[in-house]
Amino acid sequence: MLWLIGCTGMLGREFAYRLSEKKIPFVGTGSEVDIADAEKIEAFINKTESASFYASRDVKKDNKIDWIINCAAYTAVDKAEEETEKAYRTNCTGALNAARTARARSAKLVHISTDYVFDGKERTPYTEDVPKSPINAYGKTKAESEDLIAQAMTQYYIIRTSWLYGFGGRNFVYTMTRAMNERESVSVVNDQRGTPTFCGDLVSAVIKLIKKEAGATSLFGKKSAAPYGIYHFSNSGEATWFDFAEAIYGFGKKYGRITRDCSVRPCSSAEYETKTARPAYSVLDCTKIETEIGIKIPSWRTSLERFIKNERFESF
Image (tube, rainbow, N blue to C red; front, top):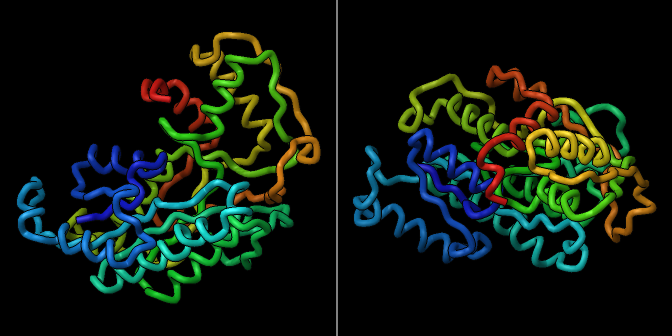
């Protein structure tokens, strides 16, 4: 059985949707199980692995948790500068507890990380072995979470991703769609470059990665394993936030999500008031994961169009 941590967030909901669709047995938790509290985790695990809890679920296997997917994260980049302890508690203490829980039960861990572990000084896509050098509090907590996991266990997959958006969550696509339906113009920065990534594509890749793991026989059938460690996943290509916004407007108009004319204007980061430094360039090289699980990652424009025209888009 799989434990999905953070199942009420944008990415967690997409995992829950896909796991249910594929009839993969899992139990999901949100804020009711504080992953920064080791005692609460232990109580939850004991309850979940009990015969009575398990008997009420139509799952044809024993009640042992053998995979943990950690989607829980403090992601408010600006607030993290002031709420450093809160960010550390979720991103670091929580990640360490998830790793220790997995190790104690000989389970495997999937942990979601970020492109913000890099400083943005490169001008070519970041590979997994480039040294981390975060420039803000959020990035520092995510970078440390990776180190804590690596120190605590060996059977883990850390997946760094970037500029996530998905159904029903707080994200740039919905923010821009609302703004473009309300205003005559929007200004968006054009000097930060990365890759927009659709949650659905990330979730599909993670499930395929898990399927490759040799110990997943009971969930998926025995497959050849992808090596444990760090992987990058984002949609292919690169864009500025301005490019992203222009594409949102174009597809939004095409599929009736945006019903009025709106001018999309570029501006510099200096013109856009924010108290937190962000990487100027954070494109991820995803060759490793494509090779290991045998996929071709779709372009960010292709996935954005697929997202905007999907009937689930209405949930925002």
